[in-house]
Length: 120
Length: 107
Image 1 (spheres, rainbow over the protein chains, first blue to last red):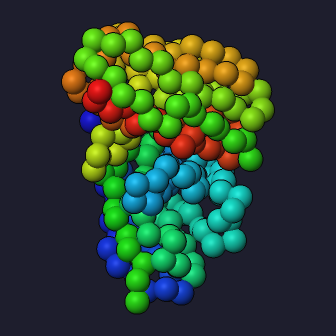
Image 2: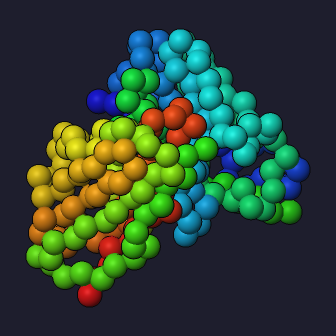
């Protein structure tokens, strides 16, 4: 049974760095052609893909946020970590991690989400 | 980046209605188009992938079609549990992008 679970702060201050962890089970981060993506959703707004990393360590980042994002994985811990620097109030959103198949690019399993509020 | 435009942004429908949602890509994306359903407070759920393939466990009243730049999601007979927001997502480019969503509301 595939599951993903996000963990991280619920509140961060402007200019701080956000670190979110996605812990997966039911599959391995070393499984060929499989990866994990981060997607966010501001309250009442649409989904926005942020970044992803595949089992072969291939990474990709949103064009608009590339300078602020870093994604990494620890296969032994079954964890994928996303950091976002210089947080702003407009970054307030629910942050989801999701499994993605490299050949197809769709998100077949999702975590429950982690609501992050950016406020002083 | 490839822009995805959904229409309408919202619609009102009744149980039993046939509902169609459209998604248009700013570039040709072959059949690399996926559809998700999201209910309030929940994570999105994959319904359709590569334009027309039904994800396991999704009822057959959901169907998808299209290729190139124009795609549709159809619900053949709307059920009470289908009132939700629907998103399209392109996977042609690895800079993945979503549409802005279509909210299906009770008429």
